[in-house]
Amino acid sequence: MTEEKRALARLAGILGAFLAAKLLNYQINVSIFVNFVIIVVVLYVLAKKRESKAKEDRK
Image 1 (spheres, rainbow, N blue to C red):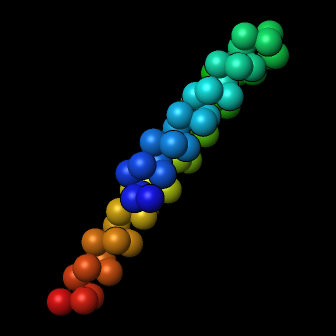
Image 2 (spheres, rainbow, N blue to C red; image 1 turned 60 degrees about the horizontal axis):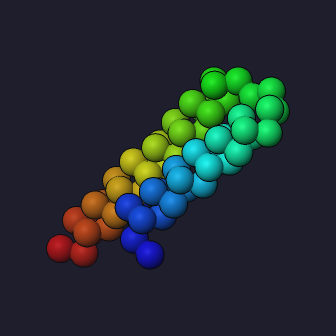
Image 3 (cartoon, helix red, strand yellow; image 1 turned 135 degrees about the vertical axis):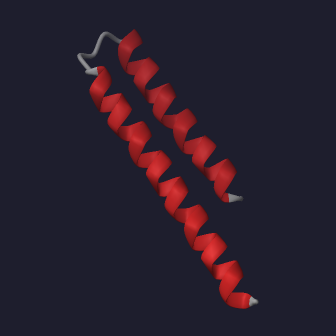
């Protein structure tokens, strides 16, 4: 599985969990959801930087 697919799967999982919690009337702030999305995006960017650095080191 590529990093893009893995990041999309994480985002879909977080979104699904957030929507399920809202449908079940759990008290969840939107800021918690935003924090999780930011964490996933940061991890994705770091993985892309690491991948591009590894490609440069191979050359």
